[in-house]
Length: 71
Image (cartoon, rainbow, N blue to C red):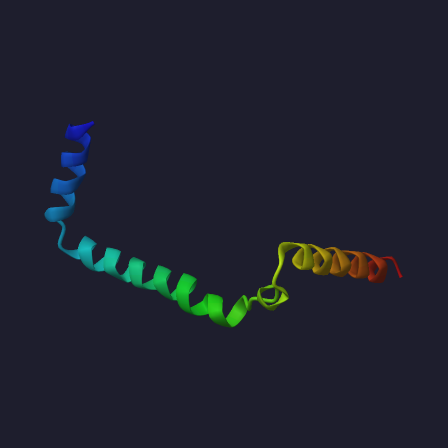
């Protein structure tokens, strides 16, 4: 197991272009998960408080949307 780890560590150290590409990949992942989450996935359930209030809200939304889809 240690030999495999050393193999990858030495390979990463000898990379030149690869380090730049990994940096770009990590920056893109940060943008996708940290920044875009704020704009596209707002926290609707946060202000509801207790878990039972959240359950009631979600159940009501599911029932309302199912009723609208049947019409």
